[in-house]
Image (cartoon, rainbow, N blue to C red; front, side):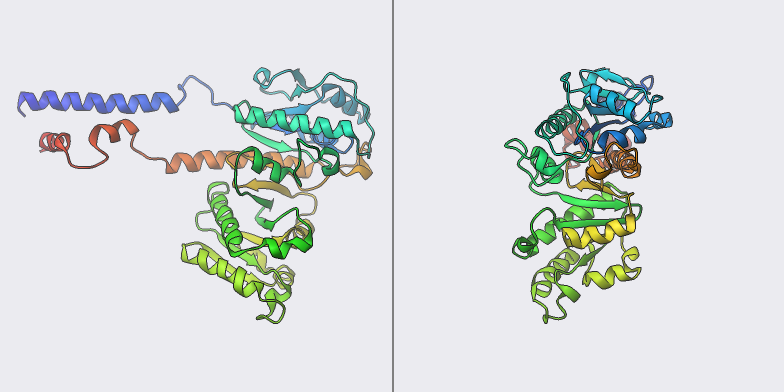
Length: 399
């Protein structure tokens, strides 16, 4: 090979190596660094309910620290009170003022206040609502600053937390707003059962006016994308429920299913998604029909939540799909009637934590597998695959 071509080849290989090395240095930790375990932020919810009880029960097993590092957003004095009240003296934790101070292999609590707070089990109080909001806000800010990786929200009392600052029907709408998303999807998850809701926390009389072909289409798209990226399902099959009894019965019981729901199903099918329906909700859950699909889209809250809670019992998880971050919660409320009695099950909260960590790992894996394999430096250097002088020189060297 002529000397001038050898020099050009060496220079070219050097540039390629430098581009790859730079990209690797920017995005890949050094081999000597241990990968950071997922940091799970857990907001304390309503302190007059069962939140602290289920948090303590869910985090008692030290084997959890092998998978993630938990960070509670709450009050250390309240945590200590519940620990004593429930006789969980083997439960230990580290109090920190900032999430940067957290320690691995320990339960951490970011102390949001040193005030003396009166615990009134089973009551809705202004102070409990305010402190629930403060914990939520701090956790979201830390999530945005990458101090934590995911957030799991313990139950709140919606009337107690409602204020000028928290003017939302629930957590789902709050997170959608805080992360500047136009749309999200409340997705209930229990093992292979997944039910999304088109209209979540609105009165039943507002359901029909709120539903449109465009809204259903957007929710199907969010659900389909989430099943692929968050749950690792390559070609998900989605069942869509009808609005009216018997899915309208061919127009005899309303024409919304034919003109709105069916139109949305057809349009999403044309875009390549595997979408079926609309199905009559009563018959759909009355048999094992639901098990043939990767997810189900219900039209309104109770249409999806009643069968879900019957089938999932107290082990379901509420996941907000369509957000740039991962947020989960148990599928139950504050359970005021059993607060402070050591009767609450932590199964749903524990599963919410596990699911948040699993979704985070699935997203990272999906993003790694689908990212552009060529470093940006190569694209800029060689014109994004277009023929140019450098391409000709490279071809000459290869010849």
